[in-house]
Length: 237
Image 1 (cartoon, rainbow, N blue to C red):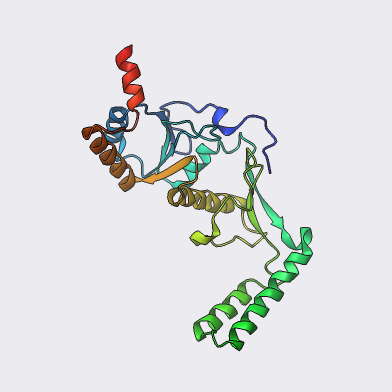
Image 2 (tube, rainbow, N blue to C red):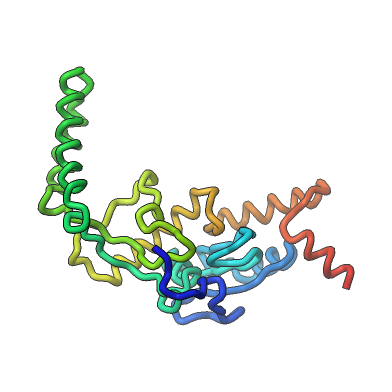
């Protein structure tokens, strides 16, 4: 799905170096020295951050733009321009919108169990997991899931989160929307933390320390480093 707004989140201005109501803080750090100095001054104030990675056509943050905060959810809400960009959450009613595939899911689950038993590759652990999954996801209880909607630039709502990373689907249609938003934002932060294909990289305190040290070492070796082109531009001016 695409956002109803023609304006991508990256074009929705954030106040610079201003503590937002949700505790997030947006800043542009164009050189390694700026990044190191900012972090030296503020590392006791923030636990998490998202960094723009210089995508050719960014949707959320430009290169050298950072959002810091004390919770994963507050950082991601700010990056997504939640409440302004049109991105929101919805409960996708799978059973209603695609009843055939909904039915096939349960038939396939049972068939997989039978085939594995027949070839002797079904363990007691598998059986325990099967019954637990059936108790949680029956045809009556597993009707759909919560997901983001109105994502920009053709991002798929169903592929936004990488379920292989262990995120549990939110399948209760009666969940409080605020709780849903928080969980989906936290899951998004974790996905950005583990994925190398996003335009955003998320950080905790340890990883910020690590990247600053890494770029300092690269600079010391005479290699390219964070913001080196901006240092050249400042020298020219």
